Amino acid sequence: MAELKKFRFYGRRYGRPLKPARQKILSRLLPQMSLALDGPIENYQAVFQDSPRQVWLEIGFGAGEHLASLVNENPDIGFIGCEPFINGVASLLAKVGTMTPLSWPNNLKIFPDDARLLLRLLPPATLDRIYAMFPDPWPKTRHHKRRLIGFETLDEFARLIRPGGEFKMASDHMDYIRWTLWHFQQHPAFEWQVEGPMDWRERYPDSGQTRYETKAISQGDSCVYLTFRRLV
Image 1: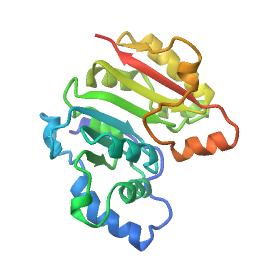
Image 2 (image 1 turned 90 degrees about the vertical axis):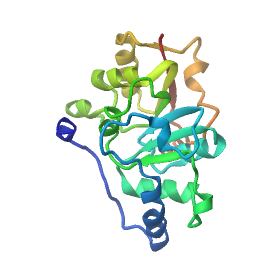
Image 3 (image 1 turned 30 degrees about the vertical axis):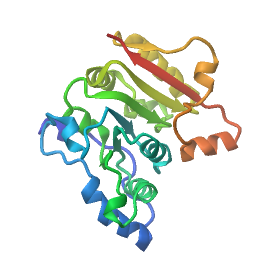
């Protein structure tokens, strides 16, 4: 565990003070839905009340629009959402639950911290899908090392995603798209799923828009949606 503490976190953990109702739902639901890390997770399915058919991970779910829609529409899938920004965590909880325990989703666990701390503790071939929807592009050259996509994280993704599983990433930042394509094309474990331009111009049909995505589209910016398959 000592090695995990060497990670340096970049970004915000807190924003504006939460309103009382949002703080109340955070205090009530987060302890019940958090994914605790006391050590390596040997049986990942045991963290869910019902054994899920598959497990999907979203890294940096922001305000939770995309993840909430997936959770509600796929009750047979187990979801793990990673987000260190506590205001975003509170926003997701407000979308998927109420103060009544019976209404809490059984197929969602939240890790309110840096996803890199979680990745190394999951067993191999744990995940069927990973989403990274509009991650921070860290546009300045000196900050590129802070980007989620890099050779080290791709090695972790290759270890965690089952053969035939997918990594899905969307962004309106074209330099980050080029960066992502280059890194994945250098990695032998992944193949870009593309046959024509509509494969990356059209959004994934199975989930809702994120706040960043909605803003980008309203401003007339182009969004790109990439899918990479884990090879056998």
